[in-house]
Length: 202
Image (cartoon, rainbow, N blue to C red):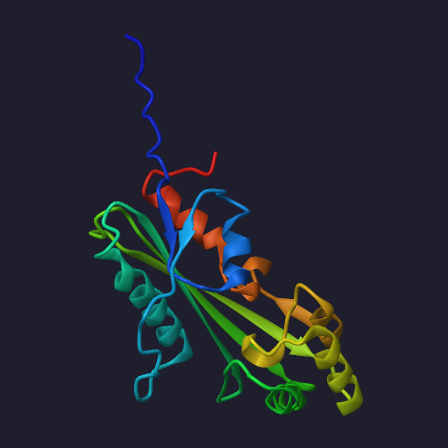
């Protein structure tokens, strides 16, 4: 008797619950056909909420916030929280904030908690995972920081740091499982979640 081969579940249509151009470029590495939408959620941390739980909660909320209007889609949500000690590093928004963030990071470790959430069509079986990456910064001079910000303009990046560009010159080492997670979307974990649903990239 011939053994039946199970057909993979199609990973389509796909909706990325993010307006981030960085996440869109990352997702394009594993699927060329997807749409993106900006989720409308309150990202205020809960009292005493850990960075891990904050990233996980926001990634899941982003995915859930758009699922009702797109019930037939695979939906991906993601969120990243950057911490320098007990200080949460937001997107700087302007050069002065960026300079201060990198002065604080100088000679220190900054931890990036990046969560990804995947909802299957219908949203009944959500999956959410977390990647943790530690970045160890060199001791930086203010002039070096100012020049970096002038060239890279990382004003829309948590921690004022872009590892995929000139920012890599600011660090001694990076400890983590997935360089994509540091940019904003943990693709290794996303593929793992897809496989749990019976979906493959190939």
